[in-house]
Amino acid sequence: MTQIEPKTADLVAHYAVLTKETMPELARTTHRHWPVKNDHCFQRIVLDTVCGGVWYDHLARPAYKHLTRAQALQAISLCSDIIDGTADLNALNKQSLVWRGKLS
View (cartoon, rainbow, N blue to C red):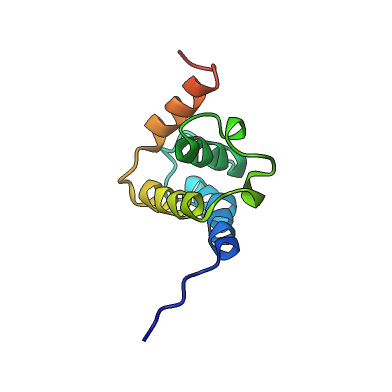
């Protein structure tokens, strides 16, 4: 039996739910030690990490309309790793801020 691959748009939608709903809710409830709480901050960190720098230097705006399948899969994987604690959100946030010139 062949397995149907999800469409890129469905992957992007899943990434959006993770960063706009799931992660902010966790930040307010069970993951209060996270350095960010707002959806746009999670999106910044995840997209900067996926792009290896400030996301809008690599993607046209709005980012969700321009993510490749590979980038969407990487973003979902990174969100999952952040949620389960195998990716360090504090370190990822600091790196994102360094790329943006807000930290040295």
